[in-house]
Amino acid sequence: MNFLISTTKNQPPTASLFRQTAVELGHEVEFWFPEEEPLGTRDFDNFLCFYTALNYDDSDLTQAIEALNSHPFNFLNHPASLLKVRGKDKQGDLFKSLSLPYIPSLILEGDPMVKSELVKNLFDFAGKIIIKPFRGNKGIGVSIYENLSLVEKRLQDDFLRSDQRWLIQPWMENTGEVRVLFYDNNPLLAFRKKSAEGSFLNNLGQGSMIEDIATNQVDRNLLEMCSKIAGHTGLRYFAADFLETENGPVCLEVNTSPGLIYTSKFYKRNLAKEILEHEIKK
Image (tube, rainbow, N blue to C red; front, side, top):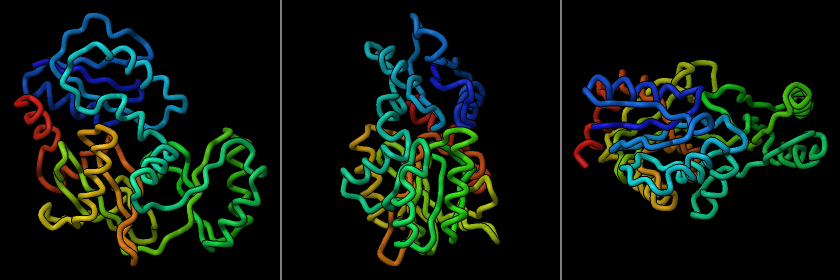
């Protein structure tokens, strides 16, 4: 069995993990970087696609989509599916179009002082806000603020350094965050993420703890939202994160290259192997 893994030079760990696992299972694997080389006449049975959310212009995905139009691979996440959810703006549009509960967001691009009044209104409404890089991962650059002047200073400093884009959200009181790893329209696993002491972040790579949720006990609302996301985007493999609030679960984000290292260790399962073996049987 042959696998072609489409990714970027700054490969997400998930891509490397799946490559290593496929090789250990005795299969031929090749990386393909659409931005740097044509697809050519490669002949592969299965196509795996893992991308970070860090590319701003989506040229890597659009080039992959064009190259794959006439290839009959078995796709685990077609680039066209990834394009629908890459970036927090597209994810917000997705949640809205599917009538899923989500956190209202303000997206800023360029000089933040141009929209300082909008930022002030959001702060006055919430009293506490979160700033996130427009495209990023692992909680890097995510901060919470209770002082408007510090918000303005952060945005202006970032703009002067890197012309960053930001996502600004009101802080929502919550009792935790739930992740559902969804594969072929079924939950592969689910767990609650608990922040490390002294942190508000629920990222596993920054010390959060895992509390298992049996797949047959996952809130039906969460599974229905995952099914809607899968059906609308065509994604076969992703993680969906939800915030637990007093008014019910709220969509946080869709992660199409969820890290499996921490979860595999916690569950004592080789999740990449389970997925690949299922792909081989299809």
